[in-house]
Length: 90
Image (cartoon, rainbow, N blue to C red; front, side, top):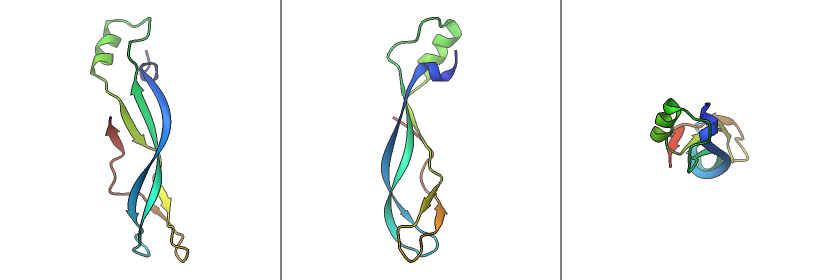
């Protein structure tokens, strides 16, 4: 079975404080995350190897945004999102 069969996927946004490297202003940005919640029960048709994998896996979030646009009207440059973990366990 594929990994997607064991999770329910949804999207969410979370605020993060980032600093623009060009104009040096700090602001709060809404970053997009993919949330993968582990199902309560293993889907039907799983063999022993799938059951062992399902027991080990946990719910987690993956950061989808890799760039943000500066909110300062004079700057408005795109910069890389850094200083934030790209994966977070729930």
